[in-house]
Length: 242
Image (tube, rainbow, N blue to C red; front, side, top):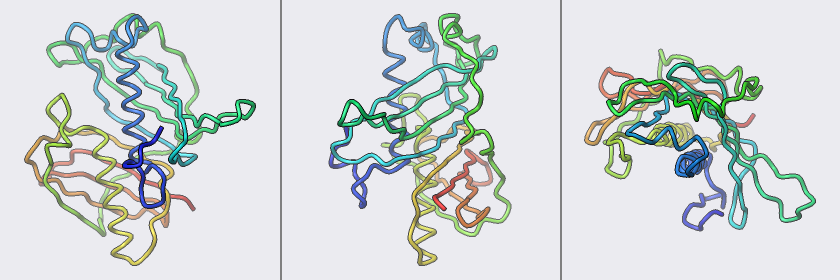
């Protein structure tokens, strides 16, 4: 359930903060012993997120209860697809749960030496072939060639995770913050975020100065890049409600 300090000005949890909830769900699943998912984080192994796509359908506010679902989709030799969903639990048990968000992640399994390693067999046994969700299937990243809004900041200690680099959810938070700053600079109201895609190119660490660049692709569609100097660290795409 949401806490009061998690709510935005509209009394709801922001879409990018729901990404952090979904990440928490992945860690919870990996911590459950004997499920197969825990094999991704045993014997020094880890799994790192390379890209993710998420679509949002409903808002979550104070008093709402949500449940998270997680599964494994397609699996390669060292790569795997993690499928997640978030549902709002109805007050009336006779009602159908309301979908809040769906998420597709491409991750890479790493061994104790932090090099790509075969996906553990216990995880492989969980895989199921499912068609791409229509809300995410056609949602592709596009390059930033001519940005019309840029914003810079220094990486803060609170943005560093246990792997000593910027947590992947922060890139979405940066891009969405800059989207809203761009809206304010243009004198217009920010719309709800409906879809976001992120491709992680290279890690970012404490003390680096990042620049977020935005380029419009349409009235409700933006391409974004997170850079350090001339080096791209992440590419993103953000779409809002029509």
